[in-house]
Image 1 (cartoon, rainbow, N blue to C red):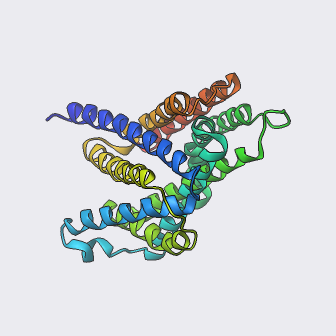
Image 2 (image 1 turned 180 degrees about the horizontal axis):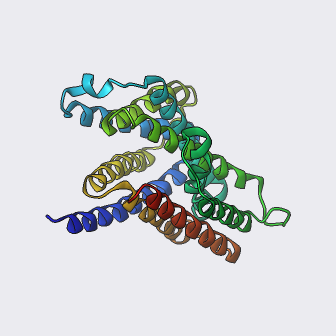
Length: 291
């Protein structure tokens, strides 16, 4: 298969990954509206952790080789941050819905760009700073502070986007010395270990029918990550990243069709500004790296 064909296949898999993750978000919202968020996320992480261990065991050198890290402390920290971020985002779904939460969360690439200078020592030029400023203006359009539309719950996905941006930056840092397989191993196992005491403490009896939804949530979570791995094997992350925005589009469809959510004109306009600024930022970053 030629390189262009590989890239096209990678993009197709990335779009499919976004669809699977959007379905996962919808199931997460459904379950978290009935049961507490930490318990739902903990069960999801148990399956994810087992999935990661199974994949890692098949890696060259087995689990011992995958577990070896030049920065174990940072690996553990990023695993903890992601576990907290997922809990925060699922909670946001229950308070704001999929459309609103995703529109705000879409600003995370801008936060990555803004924090990459002070945290990683990367150079951020004026064009990217202008895009970051435009993206935050788009977020203000979505949030509409000072109006009757604004809700304090809107700050929850802002917190989630900030945590996810920090997770991405720490991932960049560790993958300078560790393999992607090592980073993936710590992502799944650290979160599962950290959430287990919380999930068990907050355990609630689950109806038999909801265990079916929970099984589907676990399958979409593991399946989405497997598709993402396959996509990254076929195309560069910088090429695939813009197509991750399809998760917001698919998530909006789930919100509209399944949960009868409403598209506010200001939300659509603000989300459009955020996405445009994010795509420009990703493009400038690729140019800066000589891509």
